[in-house]
Image 1 (tube, rainbow over the protein chains, first blue to last red):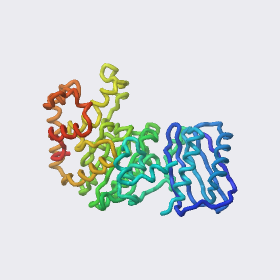
Image 2: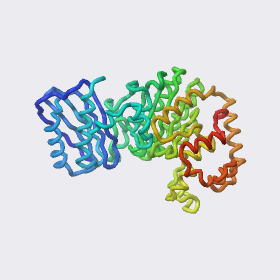
Image 3: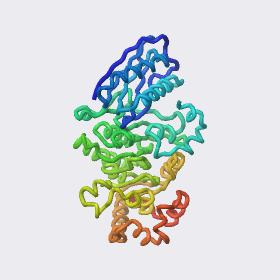
Image 4: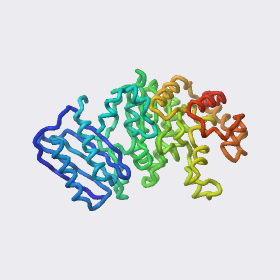
Length: 105
Length: 312
């Protein structure tokens, strides 16, 4: 297992009012993303626990791309990864933001 | 990316979504009345397994089981759903404790039924005794809840089936619904082959696995009360039917169950294969049972008429 952590400054707060959301499952080639609205509006943090050791550079690129596209201000992402490919990671991150931006709870 | 699914009308989604392919959370969302589910000890609580880290294995924030309460056709239910894709839906210490707690809550309240959506290979071997103890605690909690008047209904149709300790817990439930891909057993195909040899059971023979442990056979034997097509709607209807059908539980019922099982052993104990049992049960063209569509099979099963309603 390898632990990775990323912190980004972002221009805007994520929309919606939900406090948390979860997508995905921890399985081979898959991951779960728990997203919580717990940070100041201009901050975004991602904490990753992954079974695939030594892919820090790929994560840096995927996370950088995600933050730039979605501007997920105020959100803390906690990720348990079962060795998902970068495209799957991007998809789950986008789904997590979409879910927490829905109204309700 | 999820837009097409979300834009589909709820009635359409529940009719077209496969129980087998859905995640535990999707199953809960579609089975219950829309928006009614409230989770106990959700993923944000991070009640994760204390054991997996020791083995350098990944954790899941809900430890592979979602528990809570919601409404089914307007009435309250307690509900648990195992995630069969996380470690084969296996029972660990935390996973098991969540189900035990749910059943104990139901026992205290007495009037609210419990639905358990099994999807499990059994005990999580990394958690060894803690997992085995969890099974024993859950079985006790099921029986205590039933004794207090709670209906405990098992729904089985996931990819991991319902094996090992999960099979034992299912055997303690008031009633079960199963679909064709759902399998119910204690020892799984590979366990049997490993211990008794390939002549005893060829785990790679998929047809053999399904006709021995699959939903159709379990329904015909009376181990499951309802055979459901593999859709969320069919399982929702099955759950509602079973909540309506299950009667009072007590010593008489246990005696009747003992009698039912003894009778089953007497009648079919010498059969070599499930097809022999079906034939002995008077099913003509028994060898075609695995090919029957859900509708055809349900008609056949209803004609044979064996259920555990008088027993269990």
